[in-house]
Image (cartoon, rainbow over all chains, first blue to last red; front, side):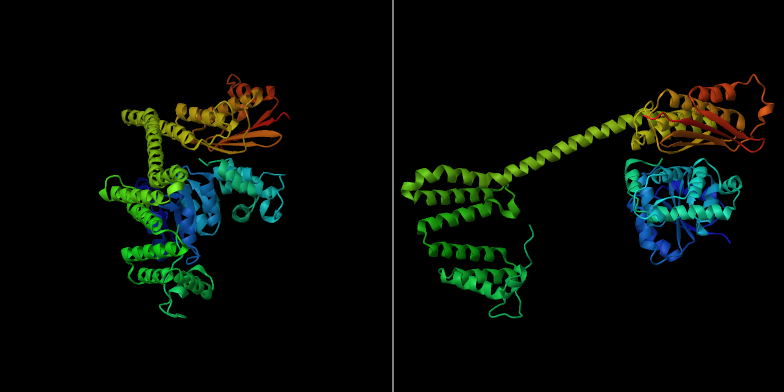
Amino acid sequence: MKRRVVLVDDHSLFLAGVRAELGDAVEIVGEAGSVTDAVPLIKELDPDVVLLDVHLADGTGDTIINAVSPERPGVRFLALSVSDAAEDVISVIRAGARGYVTKTISGDELAAAIDRVAAGDAVFSPRLAGFVLDAFRAGEHVGGDAEVDELTPREREVLQLIARGYMYKEIAARLSISVKTVESHVSSVLRKLQLSTRHELTRWATQHRLV
Amino acid sequence: MPLPAFAPRAEGRVIAGVCAGIAQALDVDVTLVRLVFALLALAGGAGILLYLALWAYATWKAKWLWAALVLAAGVLLLHAVGLSERAVAGIALVAVGLAFAWRDGGKFRLDTPLSYGGLAVAAAGAVLLLGGEGGTTALLAPGAVAGALLLIAGPWLWRLALERDAERAARIRTEERSEVAARVHDSVLQTLALIQRHSSEPRRVAALARRQERELRGWLYEDRPLGDDEASLVAALSAAAADVEELHGVRVELASAGDCAIDDESGALVLAAREAMTNAAKFSGADEIDVYAEVSGDAISVFVRDRGSGFDRSAVPTDRRGLTESIERRLERAGGRAAVLTAPGEGTEVELHLPRRQA
């Protein structure tokens, strides 16, 4: 069954491009260009996945997630961003987005990412993986809850391969594990990213910008 | 400053509920409020007028009636306290004059005759007030005049200062805007013109767009923690990636964790990485190259990866020195090592490792 997708982006040119690239891979059921339009539309359509631009003319993506999620917990969000500040990307992830990819992603990869997010898994771009590795630097104990404030060596390995441009199945082959295991490592990192109180995360985000 | 909302209260009222209303608005005991009104009422009936004034204010919202009643109450109160009639009249005139001059919430408007009229009335009041005190005039006059001037001119000067600030902000905005315009003209508009001229060459258009994107991002977000191209490893890699993109029409995705300053050794690492990117762009046939740089406390690692054709190392002719000379030897001289992971059809990954000197 095709995934039902809503696109939220305030650049109509880009919307047209995504529509053309995705083609028949998914069913695009709606489009919105602003926070005000997007919230009621998503609530009404109840899609599988919302492709969300981080920055909109009248607000940021996390506002939409916060407004929709309580009523429509089944809707998953995938942040799609061209050159946003790390703090914005982190805020949509922290609000509950299941992943972040850059707008230069190819149509096939985007369709795969949508599938993955719809199935409840997480999707990281190489840059986001680099950022997470930097923010969760090894050996720097910051106190707090080690369960969510530290990455395991395996998670670190997986993230490093994502940053190096490996796809999930390539990572699985290289580490001799299943794709499912790779997915569960990435989901676990996403959960840590959402729950960690590591102040490093906030400090890093305000100092750096993801491009 | 918002005043506490006041409305007469029917609940617990004796006359019109004014005291109860004030007590609620100010959150004090109603008996205390009644006591104050009773005391004021003893002062020539001022309390009664004040009571009526508040009632009128709350019931009809009639500003003029309210103001007049408050004024009358004030006059009665001052008279009861023991000031001479002359002094009371003077103070009343000053109050009325200033009220006219500053009406509409403290805006002193030089363009309305009412403001001048108010000033004149206030001045007459001041003369009346000071003239009546005979012997003390000499002492009182300078201070009183200065005070009066300050009261009258204060709000006007304040507004003048605010306007000047607004003008300065507008000027700064204009300057900023023209700087942005100049910048956009030098970069974006030039690139767009180039793209139009080369619109039949997709690779060239893509390379131009990509380079412009990088430049614009670098300028907008200043995401290089250590500043300019020479100073930081990630910035230098980014510049190398941009060059390779432009020369060979491929896309280079750069991700990084951590950054450090450039020295001779890490400079050699950047050159080796650049060579690896160039090789990937020239020989692999892939149109995208992934580069990842990781800086930890004791080492720098850079990975250059493509999903292209790959190759068999033993089949590479020995006269093609790029890989051996420009990457492996260069890095060995800098104290690091390089590893190449490839096989025909599997793509290629070049790993560059360099231990960091402990500072």
